[in-house]
Length: 244
Image 1 (spheres, rainbow, N blue to C red):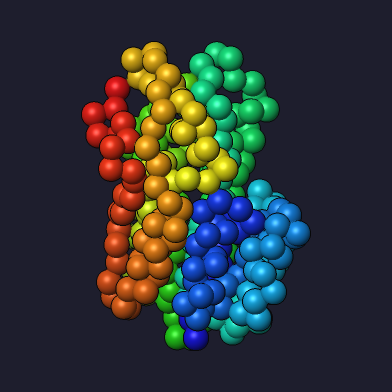
Image 2 (image 1 turned 180 degrees about the vertical axis):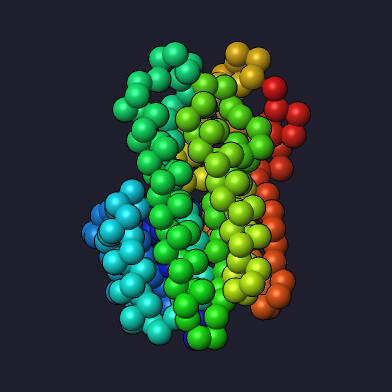
């Protein structure tokens, strides 16, 4: 039985993905700040491992990954998913605290979790594994007023590229899923109207978050030696192609 650690497992895409993997017979480790939310995701499933952890705390991340490895004997996949957003705000109106919050979760947290996974996958026998980073279509094209989020997601792309290169000698594959308008609490605003590049406010189409989860499952199930480097899954008619 294969195993996966999912960060941000207490809500949104992380929750939906975790439940799909459990349905398909995987052992799933759930990482997030709120133990109650993680337990709700697990729904009492015997193959779920609840690991309360703040991904911005490197010591807590290392401890959570060590606990999972001790429980399972190895780590097969990390879905590096936890993220933070900020409502559309012009850069000169963004406080230092707001910037640092997004950066701590989306850059520091991604790095700490990738580092812990890479170290475990490099040490285990047989060596290797797979890291799937949650980017965003904002890793390619920004929304208005999204400087912190867009910067952080460009950083995720740099992380994916570097791990893909550094992982080759150790059979560690790394790919990135860029998601556009998956319907979660975070994306609910899309259904009510969000700022567009032309200054207007428009409702945008969304997709079921389970579609994203199925895409992650496909990436995770690839055979050793195969990798989806970049995968974009999005609402067909969302304003991304030609954004701006």
